[in-house]
Length: 177
Image 1 (cartoon, one colour):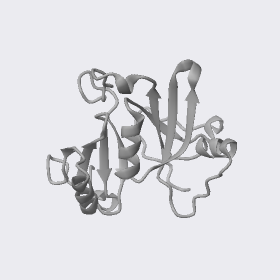
Image 2 (image 1 turned 45 degrees about the vertical axis):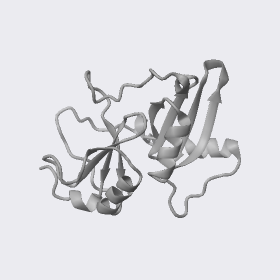
Image 3 (image 1 turned 60 degrees about the vertical axis):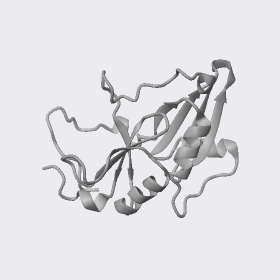
Image 4 (image 1 turned 90 degrees about the vertical axis):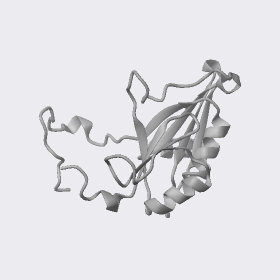
C-alpha cells in the first residue's frame, strides 16, 4: 500500500498502536425493527448476520451486511458473532423495545436542527437503475441525481427518516477539487 492518505492540518501519522483497527459498523436507532428490516433487506439487499437481545436492558441489535460472492459466513452463532464483529461496513440497527407501539415516537435524523449525524452511503453499480428501483419501491427521495448543485448523487430516506446517500463510484471521478 503506497498511498498513505491526503494530508491536511491536524493529520497525524498513525502509530503502531492502531495497527489492525477497522471501522466495523455504524449504528442507527430504529422505531420498528420489522419495518426497518423490511426496508434494508428489500430495497438494499442487506441480510441480518446476527441479532443480539439484551432483555435486562430492553433492546435488540440487528447487524446487517450486504454479502458478496465468496463471503463465508459461519453457521455457528458464536463463530458468526466473531465473524460479524470483524467485518467492514456493517449496519447496526438498534431497537429499544416498545418504541414501535408509540405513535408519537421518532428519532432525530441528524439533519434537522441542531444538525449532527448526516447520513450513511451505499455505492451502486448503476445509479439510474437504482433510482428506478427506488421509484418502483416507493422510496422517499430527498434529492435525485439531476437536482441540486451536486449532480449524480442521490439521497433517499429510510423508514425512520435517516438519510441514505447513493452513488455510482465511476460518476464521481471529477467531483470536488
